[in-house]
Image 1 (cartoon, rainbow, N blue to C red):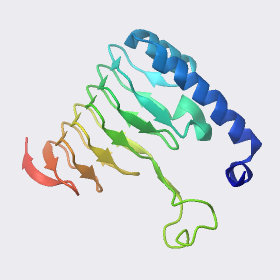
Image 2: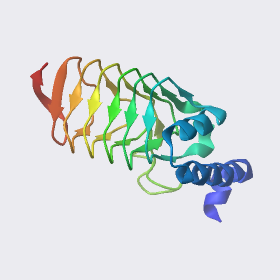
Image 3: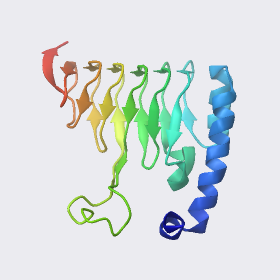
Image 4: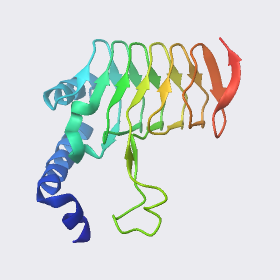
Length: 178
């Protein structure tokens, strides 16, 4: 009941409705139909984009309106998108299987003992044109990944990434220029 008290009845109802809508999206087998459902719910998605089994969470904040995907993008299986703040994928962006984009952090309830040291934050994430995000990558809130960038599998992106580069590791570090 504490969670209900902190987020309120309005956000609780939104949570329930968006959860049910997400189940519907998960049941749809074809990418083109998923995209239609996402657009109906407020997402902006370009042409010739492919969306496999993607999980959306924290929809009760702003719904699917925080999602903008360009043309010719690919989102693989088990990709997870935190829509507490905006996520923008420009044209020709690939998110490989099991990649995770976070737009917020929150250690717990408002009275959590370390909340004073790590306050709740919400920051948008942008991945610019022509970037490739490898399998199992984690992108933290507030990150911008510049044009034509490769983020190697399993990397944890904690800082903005310069264009035409390859980054790898945890935390992600420069490997080479493209």
